[in-house]
Image 1 (cartoon, one colour):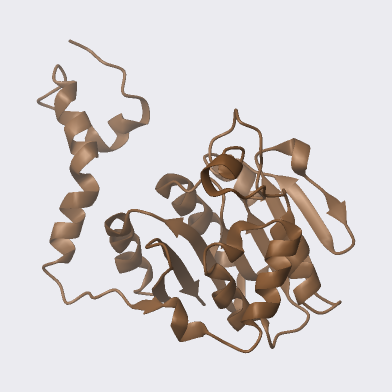
Image 2 (cartoon, rainbow, N blue to C red):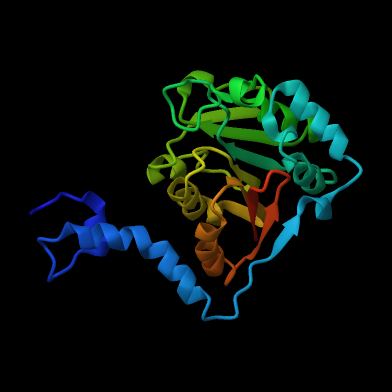
Length: 249
């Protein structure tokens, strides 16, 4: 039996099992789990903080802005971390991938959020919150796969991106480097890692990448094991049991 497994063949091709695609699919299914088991042979321990570690005097200020503008970051306690890192900075460039599409045909849509969480979100609400919270010399950049929600306003600039297509990530504001990069789009490990690979070298000195809404923590231990060799990295456990992941240059 022959089966077209597309790009899987790059990593799971077997010289002795060409007629047994089960082996290839099984290998792909178990790769991350096997890597985690091998990581357990080392002294690696991920750094994990609770959000309370980052509590600060401006937390409620940014929380109110997120709520006013229609962002769910006030429902999570992500707002605490953002207020912590943005409270005392000026003249920064911030990029967020994932602007809150409500198109029900697109993955990771916010369309169902109203019925699931009783909250009617507004696209680009985070960009507007960051603009209000930061000083007038800071610039806010955003990207989303839904071209219908892209905006260009005072100090806010947006572009199309498909996180499963690295070229579109590389094409984001190609002449810019960033102090803060927030990955809040597809919420899929492949999309998130694509974004890290393309953008990690576009962090300014002292900058950071923030990945939101990590649901399967063990998947990310593999990523962290690698990146922690070069960058300061840590996880933050949020109020509902999901994680943020931070990469600092």
